[in-house]
Amino acid sequence: MNPQPWWSQLGDACFGLIPRVPYARPDRSDCQGIAVVAQGLSAAARTDGPTAFTDAAFSIPCGCRTALIGPNGSGKSTLLRVLAGLLPATSGTVQVLGAKPQLGRGRVAYLAQRPRLTDPFPLTLRRLVQMGTYAHHGWFEECHHGDEAVDRALHLLQLTDLADRTVHTLSGGQLQRALLARATVQGAELLLLDEPYAALDQASRDIVEGFLFAPNANLTIVMATHDPADSQRFDRILELRHGALRTVHACAGHPHRHA
Amino acid sequence: MLEFFLEPLREPFFQRALLAVFLSGLTCACLGAYVVLRRMAFLSTALTHSILPGVVGAILLGLSPYVGALAAALLTAGGIAWLSARRGTSEDSAIGVMLSVMFAAGIALMSAAQAWRDFTGLLFGSVVSVGATDLLIIGLTSAGILFTLRVLHKELELASFDEEYAELIGARPAWLRAVLLILVALGAVACVRLVGALLTTALFVIPSATGVLLGRTLPQVMGWGIACALFGGISGLYLSYHFAGVPSGAGIVLCCALPYLLARLRAPRR
Image (cartoon, rainbow over all chains, first blue to last red):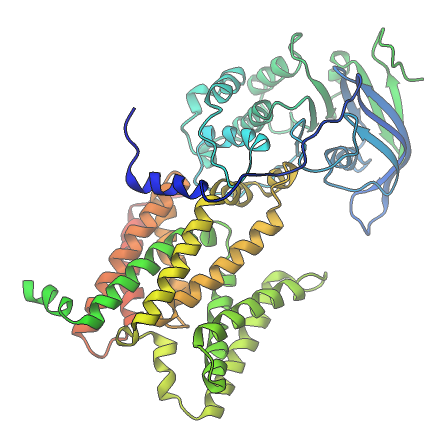
């Protein structure tokens, strides 16, 4: 290995002067097989705006792949943002992996419909995927490791050849796959995906579907989608319409069957 | 020819100015990468221009100009955050309001003090005025800024690129933004001796804009920015030494623009 240049050593020495502080308190909640459970949940897309849905009750077992369907403006994105901890619920209770939704939980990953990324930004795809490891680091700490997990995620989403490209040279579909790879590196158990297929061509979509619906992946997925053809692949479908939520189709043979 | 370069080096004031340019160029280029990438150029202009009333006020009160400058810059940053916290005033217009109000206050104070000549160094920078105390303050500020940028590098990079993800993992992008504003205020205070209140923004923006054209990663952007700032800073000092009419601030900014133009000419089209 090459010795590091002096300025790099000087930079790393800075970290020795400050103790590491985690981003959030460690998440020791126990979900006991239920990924999400909600009672009487209401939420609004903006704090001063109209309510998107009211009195929603549903539960999603761990390992269940759930589709969230409904017309535009029915509150799919709002529900996902509430589960991610980005939006407060206006009333009702909801538990995500055994705890109230909040920020700073590495076990939950959320992918927005249109991620608001700074463009252009001098960042390679590999570095973007590596950001997934930050959730398990803290303040005042540089991450030099996590390379194996990054390589594995790049391989899984077929991005290995693009690893050294800068992000603003990627297509929308490639960027979407990179963000999914970041969620993988984060090691999230629950993926909240807001219309992840919107920017994808068929080839990219096949890659993403292959990843999300891999039989051995130990993932719980809640995915907002418009495509009725998808319905067959999901274990459970939640439909939002006119401000109300109903469970259309529960996981077959699962003990937490919802009426 | 050689004498052209060696002669100024024998002057103690020029040596001090050279050291000051080195320190502030390094600091401004690293900090400026975030200013440029996050599109905070206008905000940094407001912070640097607001130094004027702070320094004038501090001199009138008999305080250290650095204290006044820092207080004014922090007041501006706080004012912008307060004005734009309610809907109806965009951050852009809040910056415009604070910038013009603070600058007007500075002009009013200067003219009340009836001492325009004393303040030209403040407005346009002056190499001669860099003393040992200034060097100490510039050195300490630079060390503090560079240290903060290093230990918060991954968070600042993440929050600048993808604010929502930073929020999701608990890395508090709002705090990071405040930290960045304070650092820009500190950096502006450190540079004001060399380039003056009117031109300090240039040290944040021009080298980093060059860096963004040439670098593929954030450290590369900072590296090219440092190279550009040091080239511009050192040649600007020589320019203002040999042509007495050119203030150091103007010389430095003009010499920084040269590498930017070269980089811009060979940059690919969007």
